Image (tube, rainbow, N blue to C red; front, side, top):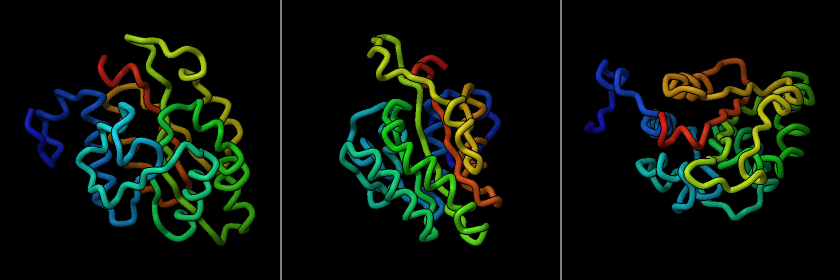
Length: 192
């Protein structure tokens, strides 16, 4: 199917999980406040990389494997008025940024007594097990635990193709100042 910029009936009827993710990233990139950062956002390396291929390279910041630093940068960008789209390809990697996520990004509204909002979009996933299972250190699902720890960050599971675009659209357009973690499923990139 040819890439179109509108959400026509033909697009909706033929939704594929990967295509919806790619469309959502292009939609986010239309907002001049968004910046994409993380591992394999400017260079190939994960399935998520392919969803960013049509996003302007000048809007993508490739980072080394340093998750705590990445989330700290995400927090700073969000405080400055940008909307960072921070990519952690798997929950297992995002675990390394929990201090910045739970103790800082989630608590900014509390610490500032509501005077300061820092809105970020955190993109993570449950690692693919098919066709090759990378074992337990890459396929963790910490959605419920992180959701329980965060009072000011919404966690959204993207279980079906039709969940993807609305989830990212909500994360971008929300007016409550909250950050959003969107949880993708690696196996669905090719299966749904």
